[in-house]
Amino acid sequence: MKKSTIWLLAIVMFTAFFALLFLQVRYMRTSLAIRTQQFDEQVNRSLYNVMRNLEMDQTRKYLEEDMIESENRYSRYNQPRSSQEIIREQTTISQPDENRSSIELNPTERSIMPETEREKALLSPNQGASTISKTQYDMQQSLSKRYLHERSLLYEVIFKILSRSSNEPIEERIDFNKLEQYIRHELAYNGLNEPFSFQVVNYNNQVVYASPGFSTKQQDAIYTQILFPNDPPAKLNQLKVYFPTKRNYVYSELTFFIPSLIFTFILLITFIFTVVSLFRQKRLSEMKNDFINNMTHELKTPVSTISLASQMLKDESILKSPEVFKHVTGVIYDETKRLSFQVEKVLQMSLFDKQKTTLKMKEIDANDLVVTVANTHALKVEKLEGTLDIDLQAENSIIRVDEMHFTNVLFNILDNALKYRKKDVPPELMIRTRNEGNKLIISIEDNGIGMRKEDVKKVFERFYRVPTGNRHDVKGFGLGLAYVKKIVTDMNGTIRAESELGKGTKFIISLPVITEN
Image 1 (tube, rainbow, N blue to C red):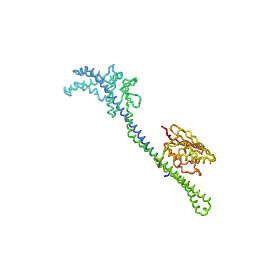
Image 2 (cartoon, rainbow, N blue to C red):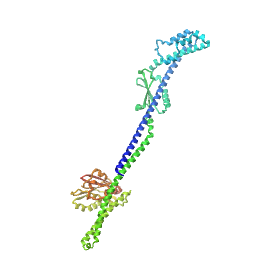
Image 3 (cartoon, rainbow, N blue to C red):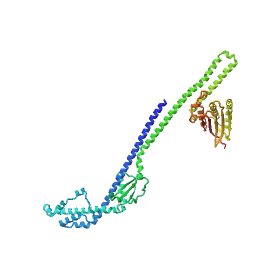
Image 4 (cartoon, rainbow, N blue to C red):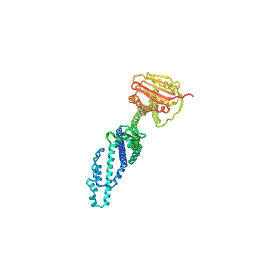
């Protein structure tokens, strides 16, 4: 698959995922807003009904008090009186005295009340006696008396409500236990069974009553309702209701969205991992192709040389010249050895397909091994007019490793140091050992061409070759340091590289030491 195709698929999938995520979040916010609005409407409706119930209770209270006070007056109305007395009393009641405020009745009240002519007709004995029987007349008289009494009673109640109620303290006008029952009943009637607490605040902004649990920390969970809104503006009292579980009620709508978002993020992470794996596989495939091309070139050269030398041996004239024969056989031997070395490099690839390399672990002295490897490379370094120094500071140098593979690790690092040296600059190599706690640290440092920071992160990957070192005179498959990384890791150790372009490279190996009991 082409890299452009992978990028196109990645962009399309990312766009689809983020569009889906945006729609989910937007739908979630809309649902929360609707849920909050629904809660607000239910609470406001409930508190309004509570206010209406309190007003009705207050009206009923004044009506009962006035009925008790007017029992004597009502008993007077049951005595027979003349029509003139009744009309005179009606006129007296309909006109407010000096202690009462004039009350303008609205059209509805006017339509309910009988007209003056109709009252006179009902109270006139001559006209009534002439049209109806005496029994009906007496019933009309009794009904008229009762009507006049009830109307005067209502007038007095309305006057008391207007003149006296707002002057009384709110704690005398409200039974707080009944108020709590009203709130609970109205909330349940509107479908809210959430716990609550409330405050009653008077017109001086003083808390008159507060139920347990009331808090002002969450202002969005406090709802306010004016009590007795017909009172003068300067004497308005307030009811504040606090719902501590409002957020739980509102966010309970998210119980469906949370699993949806979680699965969406899981799919997004899985897709990202898949795309990254595709790019890694693509890059690995490209490196493998480079490896195959490089391997073909590396193997083709010794095979061609061996083939040419073999054809020369068929010439009988060569057999007569011992020097030429010795040279040709030497070429065959060298090229065969070179070919075996390249094949061994290729066989190292099988190590990476195994989860764990089969190692023959044994205890060895790392200092002795370092000296042996250094002596092997000493001639190569001297040939290049360079230096190879050893600094053995480790006092406890006994480690448990596979001797053959660990020797190859040191060989590969030193070979790379010589391969990627600077032109016309003698190589300077330094091998040090030291102890850090229960670890043995082996560092191999050179003064070669070095690497960039981005190359240092990839130098231990299979088939990866640093571009600055990919010169015609440096051959390889990009497997050496990957092999080093795997062997050291399988021996419970770590390896890292420190490098700066143009100043050299330093490899640091850390392995656990064998402590004596």
